[in-house]
Length: 268
Length: 295
Image (cartoon, each protein chain N blue to C red):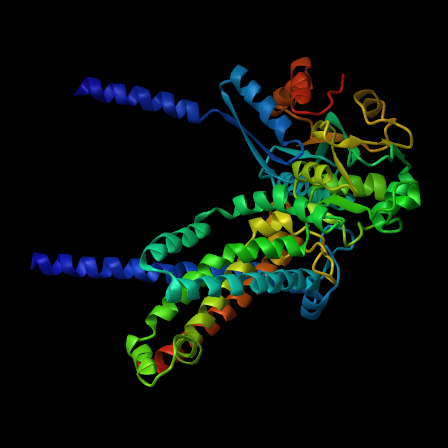
């Protein structure tokens, strides 16, 4: 009897010790989600004492969560807006940005479309509704089907900032919930134009150059490609403890390899 | 003594279960109102329902849901045009013409259509139907209201067919016998006796089918195109209310005006289907009275 009791006690202590291990909470961008998942999994393999919990929800959600103190790291596919920084500071949180990877927003069209290059100005005019037919920009006489991401996504906000100078996307643009949905739609629609993350380019859709620059690893890293964007992790002040160890791991050679596995561009 | 206690326990136990759905319903309604109404501190009711632009994340944000409401109605109208003839036609065939063996095979098969998950319909629409329609009609895109209506119409067929067939079955046999007795032929009996008698039941079937179409989310999210514009043709892409909520709820920060706006859309959607269900209930009650089947 006594023996059983002590066994139970020991088991309980071990279990509790396991649960009592440190916790790091991540929340935010669905674009950064694969990076967070890959790196967190590997990180926990090396550090069994710490548990990383990851939530998606979008860049805005992550940033709001950091300001409210309900997460330790906010992942974001855009930089914080002034209003968001003010809100955080008013709550005693001092967001610090860490660039963890680069991504390029690639412009893609149907493979049968002869267009190879568009200027930034043309792309802006297409997305805001001033150009509506491919023949206006040297293509066939075909209506342009504009594909965009949902206006709530971080990718949309980044594109809107980089490509549209914050002008509104035309109302008849087809809004898609994911990179994958855009890829499928472009593949099956001869008049389509869309934008997707660099990691989602497939041979079945045609990548076009912007201002004559191809979207590639080199041009994105050198920021020569106009629609390149950094991906962020935000912490409260200088990272300490496990948060610091994790961010250091993401930025390490190994972490950056995982970034590439996730379909993004490592910083080195 | 003991049995009395256990009897009471059972009684209250089951009563609790019966009333639990009421509790859930009440909870949902309270949440819809408490999370949806705060949006009206940002926009007025007329701006919200009558507004032409849905730009929830631009600065300043615009929360006009008229394009979304019209998108829903447009798709629903198209779906009903497709599902009413097919649904009622198959109900009539099953009831009047099909033999016992045919009926035993056909009815379960039609009902099986209802058990296909909506995401499968959406997938089918996106990969097969939309590109096919786009090529056939030389559209700029196959992801449009017409494709959504077509698929939703097919999805609602089992609901309409099955309920309409039940309604036809509820018509007492004596009605038919009486008609034949005064010399009416089969067609006259059907159009002048059976259909009017089952009319309210059939209307209920149509209204419930409509409820299903209005509330359907995944399929429209995948095939309707998602453009928040006021549709002018059946081949325009639309963004129904349900797919707007589904696509944006995950990325709206809790407590933001956008978040409340999505709840308010949910509230309006709920009111629409609520009205449908009440109308269906009233109509079917009238029908029971008319046939003298009691209250």
